[in-house]
Length: 356
Image 1: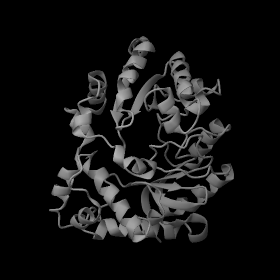
Image 2: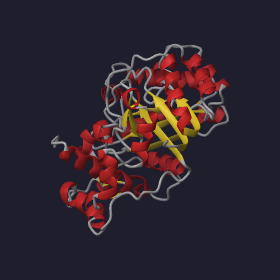
Image 3: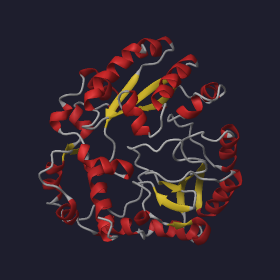
């Protein structure tokens, strides 16, 4: 019987109100599951793990009206429970007066909100009209309940010119002062995300070293303070051309057989009960199986033996082959090396499936 040490199993119980253009999880229909399905998830995996945590979401947290009851159920079904994640629901914050006080009671003191520039750009990237205005409402609500907003700002060549507007918004909302008044430091950071899921469609818009020079110094300063990096290029990585040159000299594949350093594994389970590891987008070539049809033991066995198409390729295809097939040695676009390897691997698998 296949066994794991520590597993966090996340079920897409309700889905998400947004279809964000940057989302590495891609877009998929909202689930129509219920608390009994969460119980089934826990019962399926529990015999095969030493420690188990079950979570009722992996896109929008607290999206269902019974979010408080689901939180309690998660705790009952889990042998360990991490604190409430700081990625909170803007959608619920502005619609439910009880939500922010509940978050505070759980110990949440910072909440991460995502911004893409001004109103029109932010609404377009969320693919939901009114998202920008709701985000501003959420900032006020959270601060009134002594929770400091942290801004995650996605940047690419399309919205780079709007970054000074973000700085102006921070000043207009008085975020540094208001966070200090509740005993917190205002945090913000800018990045472009990994190039998978929906964000892979924005490959042509990824920033370059010249673009980075156009970032407002305030945003650079916030980002370095939050990430602990010495230089902004340490956040954005290297050019694709430099990575191609480096990886082309690598004789081996992108991944060894080593598992997670702390022994923990995270699975995403979608509304159809298909299971994916959380390295990157939940694409068919990463699929480990279907929990209902195949069972937890088979899913875990496939994970441990690298049986999905993408896992097998990651373990066996030399990096220099991935670069030769799908890299652009003349591209100035920026990637971290880990993100770039996964970008190449996903492209390789798409090509093998005839989708490129």
